[in-house]
Length: 168
Length: 383
Image (tube, rainbow over all chains, first blue to last red; front, side):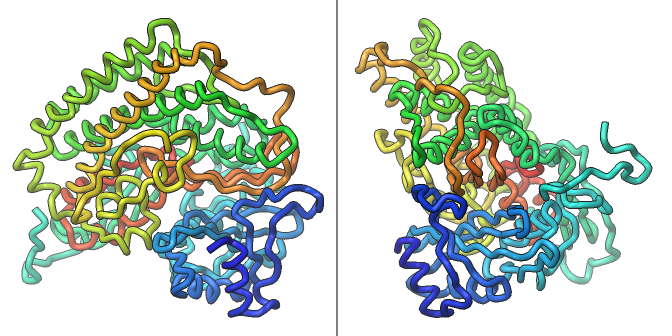
């Protein structure tokens, strides 16, 4: 199935309120060519866990592998992009959720794909997105007690970490 | 060795910190082991000791400046890391007004260096795995032959490990004079050498006892945990991006995908041994095709890339087959000369995440065997 067909299938199941647009081109330049590869199906944040389970279990989709989970800083919003792949049908798709910067909470998709466990911990560490329902959101990459989220665009490094001067 | 101790023998739980400085953890990895005698009840990996936030660095660098940083992730297979990034940038550029046309010659050179690097990487995996299990000799053989590849790379790029050789539009330098003869003689020598390794280690009784039937992960579990590369092929799934989504010019070569059967440590190890043969086949065919066309002497080794690279605004996910599995680059471009975000999907990262589940109930020595068999590089996990 193509990304468009998968998007259509998701819309059919969850409705237009939950699965909104399909991002193909950059918003800032409507004339630009299709450079979102794979195109991203926008999903309403609270529904992502349910959509994820559907993507994995629906016979026609069988998106059984989560290739990559990326967290991005888009200014007023933070977003999470899920790049999916089906080992059964050998097709790909991408889901995307946008959440406001001030309340960055996204339900965890760990139940659908175990590999999401570490990817979400990493995104929590570096981008400060809280994954609700995650079994173990301890810091993974950053040391315990590190302040701030380094991959956010407005990040400023802390002056001291446990008495050690940080910027050098 | 994986004989589980009987319940009656259980005593107290002890917490043992294995690493970060430990010869068997393949870099600065710390495992928090909860053990009862020799039996591991839990193995919690602690990573991040090598973290330098490559992804943040990338946001402050222009596209060509990022290439040397990719070298420093998986420093054992730097060529393959560069290729993935460069292909992603070229793919983005291809959708804009100024696409970059990579010359055929550069494509051949890329394939040859990547396959050589795959051999070098698998040789290290083979040698180090022997050391983990207690066999010292294979390591010396592996490093002797790996050295030849590193010398070839040094002649080509000036560096032994971190090459900065594959560039957007082509490669940094042409083959030096007589290089293809050296290449040909190495490939001719190395093919039969794999049989020597197999006699040395692969079918050794002690080695089999330590690895066969240990750390089994089936295909479904592998997919769930995001395993790729030799690790998933060891479980029996013929999944190889070079065949599945042929990038560069991989569709021009004839090669097989070696697979295992049981998904244990030995299968994963053996897939790497067999893959070296396939890499020799690919590199030889690439060299043959180059020579048939007079080494493509009328072609340049790189496209003319004028001015600053500014890929169009958009997002792309590009993955390639490195020696450790699917390496993905997620690039968000805002149309400027620097990416707005680069995310790396590391094959070792996902492989290690399943270690905790696999280790429960095994012996400490088996955990060492598992870590060696999934062939991790901490530079890529921590980034």
